[in-house]
Length: 379
Image (cartoon, rainbow, N blue to C red):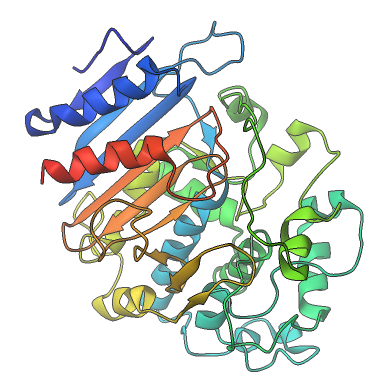
C-alpha cells in the first residue's frame, strides 16, 4: 500500500522498482502544483503503478479516492482510437476506406473520398463548424453529425494536418455507431461491466456526483500565431459547448472532450494498443494488422490549428517532440489542462495521468513529464 505524507489523502499501490514515481507524484503536490490527481502504469497486463491523492472539490474537503472521476478532455481521443482499432480488428471498419462507405451522408460537399485514416489523423479539413450556431448544439448528436455531413472541407483533404478538437469525436463516434449500433457511451459502459473499469461518455446523476471539480488554467493556452483555422477551432463563440449547465454538458456525449475516468481505467482500456493486442486479462482484442494500421504514421507537418510540428497516426500523436516522455517511439494524446495517456509498444506499456488543477499547457505538461521521466528511469 502506497501513501506519502506530502500528498493529502494519498493511496494506491506501487511495485517496488517504481518507488521514484511515487516520489515524483508527491513532489508535484509538495510544490503546490496539484489539487487532486491520479497516475497509473500498466506493463505486460500488470498494473505496476496505481496512485492517487488530493481533493476532488474546490474547498479541499472531499478526498480524491479510487472512485473519483475527472474529465480528461482530448485524452479521450486515445480511447476513441482504441475503439476504432477494435472494429478494424472485427472487420467492421477499414482505415483505408472512405468514411462515406459507412456513413453515406458524409459524402456531401466534396467529402466522398476522405478515408477513415485521414479523418482520424486530422487531414479531413473539418477542424470546426464554420457557420455560426448556438453553442449548445454541441450537446445534440444528430444536429452536429448532420452539420459535419453537410459541410465542405476547409482545406483540400489529405494535403495538411489541422487538429480537430471537437469534430474528431463526432466523426469517430458516428462511425462506431453505424457499425455497432451503439454510441460511444454505450460501448464504454460495456467495458465498465466486463473489465471493471470506470470510464464514461455521457454521465448519469450518480456518476456526476463522483466527478472532480476542474479548476480553470491561470491563463489561456498559447495557440501560437492565430489563423482562421485556429480561430474557428478554439476561439469562436460556437467553437465548443458554452452557456450550458454543467450537468447537461456531462450528460451529453461529446467524445473528443468530455469523457470522465480515472488513471487506472484510462491506462487499462488503451493497453491492447501497447500489449500486442492483449487486454490486461489476457484476451486478444486487437489484431496485429489493426495495431500496425492504427499506429502507422499518416501525416507529418506543421499543424494548421496547433502551434506544433506533429506526426499523426489514426488518432494518436507520435512522440517526435517528447511530449510523452523520453522514448521517441512511443505514442500518446494529451487533454486540455494537463491530462495525458502514453502508449509504448516497445515496453508493452501504457501510462495515464489525470488531474483537476488545470494548466495552460496544450501538451507536454511538466507535471506529467516529471512522472513519465521517472517512470522510464525504472524500465
